[in-house]
Amino acid sequence: MEDYQLLIDLHKNANRQGPGGDAETEMALDLSMVDRSAPLKIADIGCGTGASTLLLAQLLNAQITAVDFLKEFLEVLESKAENMGLSEKIATLSCSMDNLPFGDEEFDILWSEGAIYNIGFERGVKDWKRYLKMGGLLVVSEITWITRSRPSELQKYWDNEYPEIDMASSKISLLEKNGYSPIGYFILPEDCWLANYYQPMQNSFKDFLYRNGNSEEAQAIVEAQNKEIELYEKYKSYYSYGVYVARKL
Ligand code: SAM
Image (cartoon, rainbow, N blue to C red; front, side, top):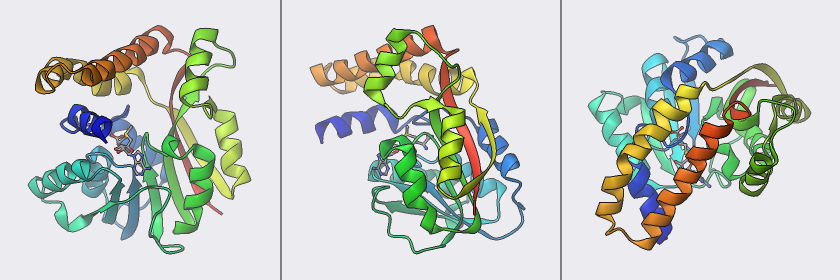
């Protein structure tokens, strides 16, 4: 639990808790070709402090259930929603994504940015499908190889961190195998990683260490993040998040 407290402390004041961007959230929405004035029910799974939730609430005529297992992130989301006049459109739900209390065919759209890896892409797309109406949309970002081969240092790192990392063709094929019709895919550009996520995080390290008395645990988190960032900077042409948009058949 101590570790979660530190991770919450590091991430909760950030705009995003993973790579992404408003322009890319909107690009995924454009790809999905939804009617922005139609009343929609959406779940944003692993929403963090709600970068995508808040944008979707602004752009759509939607009721959004924002799900995360960390209450502290949801509290930040709630206060942002209130400040932006969006509270009526957003309900938060503190719950694990592997045990969602939703009914069958409850949602028009399931949205999930940088979070499905927590239960694995294949399990997530399989298990969540029943919550979607027929013809409903899944919009999900997932760490993806951009090239067919890659340096062994990088392969080893990701084999250890997330062995489900794969090429877009494999992710798309998994969607097809599990009863979805893929609509589109794009990869997140570099600024979604650096300008929107890693740089603000690096700028917060000094205060984070100070707040936590420069503890060994806090130092270990900073070290692990720095390693991840270094690896990204060295090998960013080999991997990114892919954003996948698919319709339930
Ligand atoms: N979607 C947000 C964004 O793009 O800024 C957050 C992405 S962050 C990389 C992953 C999020 O998933 C975190 O907010 C974390 O608390 C949440 N999470 C991790 N495991 C989870 C689980 N089992 N159930 C629900 N949420 C989970």
